[in-house]
Length: 267
Image 1: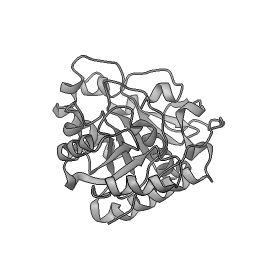
Image 2: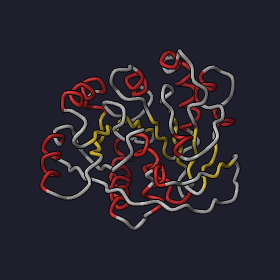
Image 3: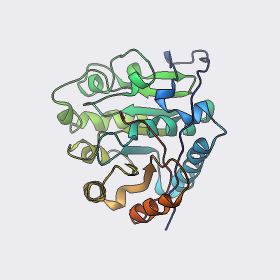
Image 4: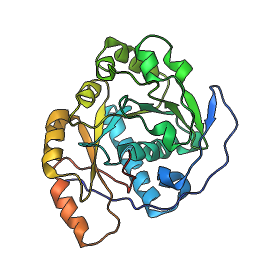
């Protein structure tokens, strides 16, 4: 059985933006509230956990044909969006890899706010056929990865994710990027995560220590399907103490491969 690890929060500091490349560039403001530990404290223990996660995903990629990864959680406020931000930064390796973060939580998008970016049309408009995906993608500096945001809010958000347009969008994007990370809505109670799993190669499930109840994890695993899970990410463990073993024993049975992070409760 593979192991669970925890990530501990470190403070953030702003960094300068890089020059523009072949797509429009947005310069993110990295604040402590974003919990972007891989950027702000690259030599700290939290960043090291993401390196380990990156290493494990690379190891699995050839045999499992991993490229499109869904990140979800049983319930809101487990930290999935913060994990997405850090994982994208880790996989991008400062621009060595083409990494796209797609915000598919059309109900409660938070990525633009976390990065202090103005909103622009995104996945919603792509699924409605109003724009092409490439025109909605921005390079995010200084993080060196690309963002397709949720775009405008719609009452029929769940229905949009169940249309054939999503297949078209994913197929187009898969040709352009080494990794695609999909920030999904929570698995409970919406059906969005279930719809999205059909368009990705594997799923990472984020659970929060001392908050996500086992019954919710059981239900989320049942909805997603064990065969689709490549990792359970234990989030919000603040120290390596005796309580850590309690969390490991609780979640280790869910094919728990890899790594978590202390994230904020708005993701």
